[in-house]
Every structure is written in C-alpha cells, then in structure tokens.
Amino acid sequence: LFRYTPLCRSKQWYQRRVRGHDQLDAECLQHQWDNYHIQRTNDGWSSCDSFLSEFGSDKYPTSQRCLVYREKCAVKDNDRPCCKSVHCHLWLMGKSPQV
Image (cartoon, rainbow, N blue to C red; front, side):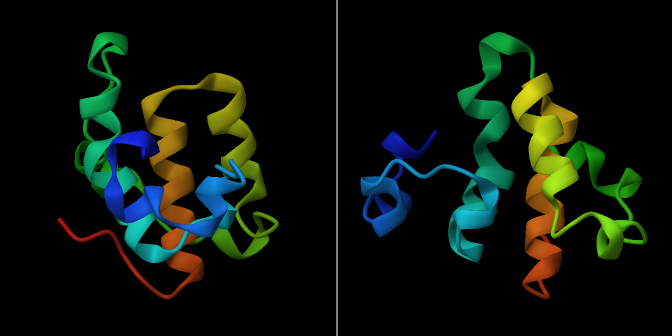
C-alpha cells in the first residue's frame, strides 16, 4: 500500500520498513483509510467508510493504545479489523477519518 504513495513513501518510517499503524502519522493513516480496499481489491476488501457507523471509540481507552486492533489486523489480515486499527490510531491523535 505504501510503495504507491509518494506522501508515505518519503516518510522516515517507510525507509526503515516500519509499517505498524502506531508508527504512522495522521496523513498516512488517512491514506490507508481511503485506499486499503483499492489496494486489496483482489481480496474482496470493503471500503473503510463502509464500517464507520459500526466503529465506536468507547473501548479505545482500554485497548493498550490500539494494540488489540493492530494485532487483529496483523493476524486476520482482513478489512474490518485493519480499518478498526486505523480508526483507533486516528482517535489517539484526536482525529477522525475524513470521509
């Protein structure tokens, strides 16, 4: 996903190949939110926007800084948990995905 994005490709974390959501800034998280489903079309991923109404932040304070969601994304490699992880990390920054 990042190799196609000049915005994210130029980031220092990319050069070190750090790809965890906890290492991304808000711009790159937003890029993931907007484009996960495009890069994963062959996997049948849905747009993160399609899950937005299901995501609440009530459990985020106890999620160990979103670690729970990052791990689910890594293990399941599925659209919903990966979008939830991005949503949580944006929330930690005091932001919401722009739709």
